[in-house]
Image 1: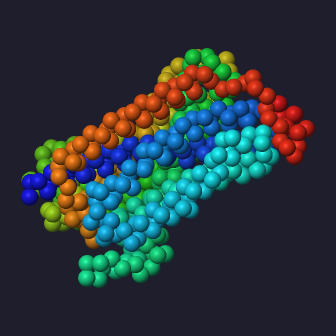
Image 2 (image 1 turned 120 degrees about the vertical axis):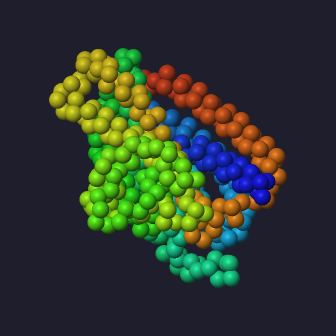
Image 3 (image 1 turned 90 degrees about the vertical axis):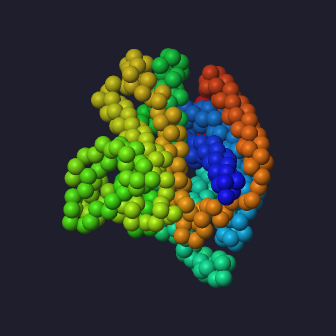
Length: 464
């Protein structure tokens, strides 16, 4: 018994480490791909070389990020078969198809046009190059869709029947478009766009504060601020809708996120737990800091709304509380920070306080942007921890427990492989930081001529 618990914990830690590292990269890939497509479309529309040079500079960081994302994601496929073989046997009929769709319909689409996007400058026409960039962008978003479809199905399985302990697919449509997918996909997509905006804005702020290429990076800081001023509040609304939906599909997760043990019946105003230290043994919080009478408004949007507590579920079906509770709050705090800084910067631009002369002197504002990319990364990680740990003890909610899904491996093998993954990811992560630092320090290329299109050289000459 002890050894099986140890194996399960090591397998979970290993997969959490792999997934936690990998998830740092695809959101930036998606966010930057959208930015590159917009910049290239503006270049095509205006013939201004500024947009071309912007696209070329940010595409270098995009390519580096894309490469690390691909390399870091490959071990996840092997982990399903090695560490989670029972899960693969039980749900592989559907999960294998969805992940296969991601590889064939999304990743291959990205890969097919990535070479043209990276090496096709000056070799194909501008419209063809824009189309290639658009296909890379579309492929990255489509990849996120299939990944979230698979994960959402594990959260709210639909379109299947359990017959003699075998999972039978009855409706691919219902399985793919399961109840969780609309909320989770759009929540993640907006997070990716926010991630891209924070990377653009944070790097631009660094250049401005160091008074380098100010005329090049001030516009990108402004555009990033406007994007965050719009996307930040939108993300809060989408996340709030997802929380309301959670009460009907995963009420135990919602109770853990809110640190609530006792059920609050409808018709009574509930308090909202700000901070607490959960004690599962007592089925209560050892201590808590509460705000009276606003819990219903925050959690259910009804002053006297009913809120289910963890005590309403058998102990064996209760998720851990500590990680979802605090991860959720850190995610919300980071999201509010990103939205507020975006609104602050957009307001400063609107009031005329972000001119070339003034922007480098606004050191507090620029310093806040330094913290934006780390805050966005932290928000994504904490959101993922909330989502995955809050689903426990189920790996496929209501159908397959995590303890039933893990392979029976020697603990030493898991420990050694975990150590190997830590060394491997530390190496590629460090290499990525070194190359990113070189790209940022070298700055944009403002000297080389703008390539001309095969079909319209005169237009490209004007763009220079």
